[in-house]
Image (cartoon, rainbow, N blue to C red; front, side, top):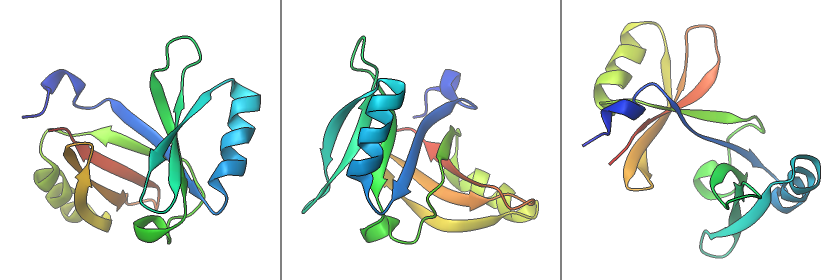
Length: 126
C-alpha cells in the first residue's frame, strides 16, 4: 500500500545518458554528490548521494536496455496513490503513456507525456 503522506511529492530524479560515468564525475565535482554504483547486469548505473549522510537523491543512468531510447533530460518521478488510475487520467486528459508500467524499487512506474509535451514519470510505492 502506498504511504499516503508521500502522494504528490517528487519521489526521485534521474537522467539517462550515453556516458553515465562522465556525467557522474561532472556532478560529483560540481554539486559535491557522492556516487554509489547500482549493478544493472553487465554495467552499473549510479545513485548520487548526499555527502553529509549518504542519502540517495538522484540517479545517473546509462542509455542502455530499457533506457536506450530515453532522451538525455532530467526525469522526475511523481508519487501517486494508484498508478493505473493515474494512467487512465493521463489518457482521458490529453496526455500519453510513453512507457507502460514496470517494476522499480518494489513499486511500479510509468513514463508519461503531459498535454503540452513535458515528460515525467509516475511512481506508485509498494
